[in-house]
Length: 397
Image (cartoon, rainbow, N blue to C red):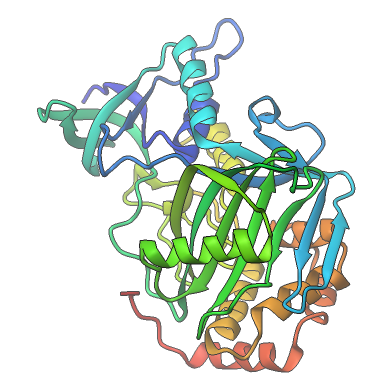
């Protein structure tokens, strides 16, 4: 069977475009890069709305020219109002808007002869030593792509079985104030000066772009999302009462919900079909951060494809030790054994911020992890660890 293309990437978000760019980048003269097809859903409910991605890294990064803002200090507010302000050393906390990233990656692919096609994908399956993607184009006509490999970033139809399943759900407002109230030198990572929901955790998140402009978010870790009125009320309270912004206008909104569970995501859908991005387990369960893990995953997969190899599997970008620690923390938060606000405030006050960020990236050593663990509520965490093997995994509702 002849192939329409060597590689089909399903989805034109962070995961799909990062991988497609990594594979399609031209080789030196005399070698041909693999042929790549990228498909994204037509405008409508299957296509994601604009999003903000944040990550951290040392020095100059490949997307620095696309950033909205970055910071070399992080700030937390403990539940009692105590301010924890920490420098990041050589690291910077970076803010990237999805529309700017996607436009730049699509333009880059276009220069290399790769077009992003509109296609509502219905299935991606092995077929004849390769894989076939079935769907419909923007007009509703059936569409088929035959490919040697398929990398699929579509959200799974159902979440994997888990012992603990929470949501990180949020709404954010891009606000402009009448007076200069923000500190553009520091991002507020967590602000716990908020009413706490029963059986959950709530905090504010502020990314200042100037003295007058910032993204202000209200975030909860809990089992169910709020309705629109719930987010509006919480954000009004945070902006007006806690932050004291005074007069402000809301220029743009964004909203989302990120699964936080200890479920194990399958990383392939067949011998020639692989899941990538959040669908392939790139989201860190205890934090919801995904973008930096997508970049590591994309580099690994692109290198394999460009060397002429079919990847044995999508790499687990979060190691077993990190996933085990996440499972313990999620269980401790879900049972209420650990006060989330006090936990995170103490962690950032007792451990250098750059080390905490490396820990959240899974880049710390076992000894560093042990020392960080001693800064957490040892008995509640130990109880959660011991009971995990006794818990049954079930599919989240």
